[in-house]
Image 1: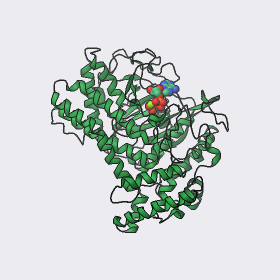
Image 2: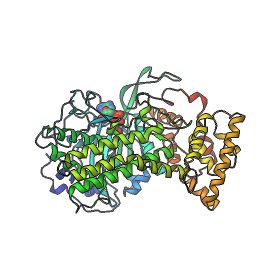
Image 3: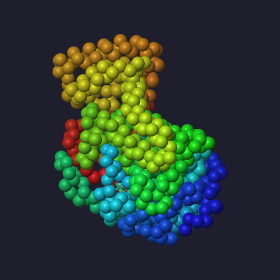
Image 4: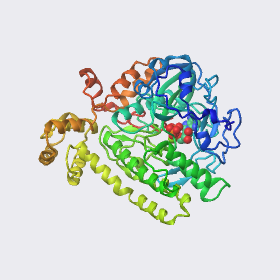
Amino acid sequence: MANNTSNLDNNQDTGREVKTLNDLAECVDYSFINTLSADPNATASGDDHNPRQVFSGHYVPVKPTPIENPVYIAHSNTFFNEIGFDDALAHTPAFMRLFSGDTTNLPSPMLNYGWATGYALSIYGTEYTQQCPFQTGNGYGDGRAISVLEANLNGKHWEMQLKGAGRTPYCRGADGRAVLRSSVREFLVQEHMHALGVPTSRSLSLFTSSSQTVDRPWYREGSCSQDPDVMVPNLVAISTRVAPSFIRVGQLELFARRARCNEHPNALRELEALVAHLIKREYEDQIDKTQPFEKQLLALAIAFRGRLTSLVANWIRVGYCQGNFNSDNCACGGFTLDYGPFGFCELFDPAFQPWTGGGRHFSFLNQPAAAQKNFEMFCRSLQPLLTNAPEVLSQLDAVCNDFVVVMEQEMASMWKAKLGLSHYDHDLLMQLLQLMVQTRVDYSLFFRKLCDLPTDISGVDKCFYNPPNRSQIERWNTWFSRWTSLLEESGNVEEVKSKMKRVNPKFTWREWHIVPAYRQAQQGEFSLIHELQSVLTKPYDEQSEDTERKYCQPRPKEYFCAGGISHYSCSS
Ligand SMILES: Nc1ncnc2c1ncn2[C@@H]1O[C@H](COP(=O)(O)OP(=O)(O)OP(=O)(O)O)[C@@H](O)[C@H]1O
Ligand SMILES: [Mg+2]
């Protein structure tokens, strides 16, 4: 199927306005087909929708299964603009067909199939195969995510992936679908994160079906249950996400595990090709390709460590908790991927974790430790390629061991910026975090209020979930006077304020704002989604008074302990 590819390898950057699918066809660049290998047992038609083991090859060609009666909900005009797509394109029938899962009748040289990839899983540094129905790890991977094209757009190379596009060989018997709720969340939050300045996969478009539903466990109205207590039919949807690649740490792991035990004659070569592809897609600018490959691997580990530590510090800066930071949800490009069990911390709690299956390992302030585990698995996956270079191998060990140090530096500079200081003061931060826990503070509101440089607790009084008692007020005021005196070294007050306002967002994700939007969407009304798109893509701006009144508020009491808002067990 994928042999005759020379006509698909279009490396010219057109930088043009894409108004039609024909324009897009001129930008496609499927050069990965020349580097990576397809599963030799794949069907020529891409009709490969039953769970099965995939023993080798980097990807399986799979045709998406379109959703029935697709309806346009939204596209990201910010992202359209970045990649040179004309806004009107989102409303064309051809665009809707492709991005609701129909890859037939595409203009040449676009492929009439997509591709899914296998990956392994490790949880907090422990390798698993049990989640694979065959207990081998050969049946795990993109169960419902199918990439449909790669293209050079406005000077950058992008891969576009449909989520919820039907079953693949990795579906493990599940339906391959994503429900409207989770699709709305992922679509909105990706662009929110981008606007917050946090590296992320991006949102292209969101389509739902007006008729097709799947059942998922969920919570009754007002339920405080930990586990879902009712089965609910949900409309299905397809959101399209975009990134330079979707290579995950888990994906490297799969190929490294095979190489480690020489599972087939090509195992080591497949690992090497995948890593070379990773460098090309994600680190081309950072890695000197004239260096010996072993040295490139070392540079890759250093570069990924830099991105991952910065990413996690950014997560904490904006109050984001990934919730399930397994290696298969950790993108090797160092951006946020898989917005399922995520949440944003409202009431500050270092152990905040919205996903009931995630535990403390993946809770808010434990994310640096979870990232370290993923980084260790990443380094471990490079080791089979370094057996003939013991010196580089020990340098790689050192890079891995130093993760903690680099992470601490990133965290320190993040906290320093949040507090508007010119030097990081560990004691000051510890005192602050303790006070925040003891007095029940809203994380985002509090830090945003700090940007006005209040000199005592009265400047942040709207940020508490319970009024602090007298001794707490005293301790807060002591903290404020210490902070105020340190601020004197920070320079011009107005500059400090405006710098702080660029790292402490005013509008962040609050789940109780999102729930009405996806509920309304289930009834065919999308205005709240559009409103949220607008509010959440300007998180640092002041915005209107009405918007502030509506969106810049602490969580109302009734939404604490509310299934589907304060916690959820199912994210798909
Ligand atoms: N409804 C489904 N049908 C088939 N496979 C599924 C379904 N839901 C989840 N999976 C698969 O189960 C695995 C674990 O799911 P998880 O929630 O981490 O990922 P996801 O949200 O589907 O995908 P991604 O990590 O691609 O964003 C993934 O490999 C995913 O593809
Ligand atoms: Mg996932």
